[in-house]
Image (tube, rainbow, N blue to C red; front, side, top):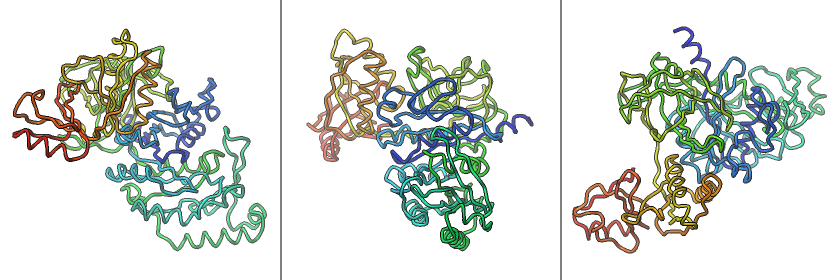
Length: 525
């Protein structure tokens, strides 16, 4: 039991969130660099790769954005670290929201020139709802930025959370020299051999007269001392407030040059929590319980073309997982053995024998798992709560250009739909020659088309549909096919056999209810 408690205590599982282009993926790379998981930024140890390690899908490398959530584990300073690198683009927010459910804390990356941006607000709200610790890294200090105090005030004003500057930047742009460490009362000066390597640093006490020379003169030295004195008049640091998610420790740095990354990582690991307890329909599950439990928060097909398989990502919530041990799948009521559990460094895989609460594992999915499923030890019956689902807002009619590719078309649409990023609907009584694809963000259509071509060899014919809402038929006075519909509504069917109404605007709902007495419409999930 002592070993179990020790292993769980050293786990740190967190997500990195930001608006697109704030530097989230670059910061993730630098964490891997300092953790020794990669020898040089953009390079998996021993294997050269020009694009970011965390961007495993080819379309991500081409566009320079993350469109899936990557999972990475590495060891550093006695901690076992699980990073969940989330998509920044709002069109992939559904994947991001689910991934945040698997995290115990969040690192919020903010562009020092732009401040708090729209997607940052949305993702912050998800974290705030769960009251998880949120750490702020104000990035791109190697460029001209806004006033640091102004940025902290904006975080407080826009996001409704208190801030505490753990360190303070010395200059910005070309004049960015390092940070002042408030806890140590000293200055960290940085120098670097290149963006792909660790930044060298020199530490000197703020009151050491030699600091003036390093800063470039008495004026800069005195300015920094004045800023530090002003900071001292602010709020006190409160670790309990950090753990409760009401105070965000703020760090300044540059992920591109590595300046400030290592001090941030070291402080973050000390401040953030080990695995948190999780709520189920039967009450709270203690993370340190010896009984294994986990939930599925992501499903991904074809991560490796050589494997052509589906991986279900599970967050271990309690106890210890052991390879080949018997587990119970709550939704199917079946016992099974997970014989090839894997941990990931983006697309790189490693078979493991054990995992502990806080860890993220990937298991082969024969088509049994769905997002939100619970896996426990046999004899335990409960379901983890809070995995969000989202109503599609954009729809397209999709069919294969080559009718001879029908089999591949069906396989591809079904497998990608099971990942949860898109929704696939049938047109009742129309077969599978064409389907309706629903997504939260339109960029998902591009990814869907790209993957169907690259992974299944199917070129698509796609045409837009005017719908922006979806409701499930909870009760009907007649067979769904016999309902009286208006021009702005269509009858669809999902792969579970549920009948649904897709429509545009709010007027069709009134029409449908008026002309079909007894019809009841419910939220689609």
